[in-house]
Amino acid sequence: MTTIKTALIRQYRNGEAIQFTDDILSLTENRKPIHPKLESRYQELKTAYTVASDAFEPSKKLINTQELIAIDKERDETTIGLRITLVGLTKHPDPAFRKAATLVLKRLDSYGKRIYRFNFQLQTRITKDFIKALKDDPSLNTAIDMLLVIRAFIDTLEHTNTLFGEKYLDRTKEKGQKVEAEMETLIKNIEVTYRRFIDRLRAIEEMDDEGLLDMNLIRDINASIDQYNQVVIDRSGKTTDPDPDSEEDIEEELAAE
Image (cartoon, rainbow, N blue to C red; front, top):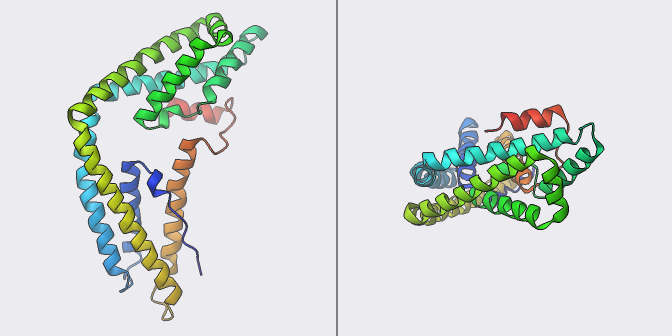
């Protein structure tokens, strides 16, 4: 018997939860015919997905105005540029510059090497905490004063982060609160119907004496769960990132939007 893995669906972002559900539905459809005892749970999940998906795009537009998107992009690019520059400066020929860059890089990475992948609110708070730490720690202040190019990055990052926070709060208060509450309910419904679907699938697997269940479906679902769970794990910083000096790591950051 193949064990169905646990999806960290509560930790998926709204768009991820909706896309994950779409993948599960597609995988099930691709293994037709759907088991007769799974059909009702499949239809429940499909309905929950359709309702949430239809509501998601308009709700996203309420929050993600072009102005916010532009500010967030600048903030992301500044964050990426800051880290890449610090990584480069750790190879500076002057030992004092290497030491200063390493000190600041270590503090930045203590918040996560992919801060720009966090959700809006978390990225804003973490960036604010990082800027505050730089101001409060004399050794970090001295290091930044030595690395003038880093000071320019820090000033820009502080400005864009503050601006984003103000604009996001205004926009949320204006139009987002009601829709976000609605989305929370819809995503919760997806979670509940997904659990019911998986519970039924487990029960069918245990009692499928006639061999009507395609076991490849469970393997497909597990592969999808692994993929989406890894996004959550990466976002939480629990995995081991590539060497910050590696070309692959820097290329990935340069390519990130």
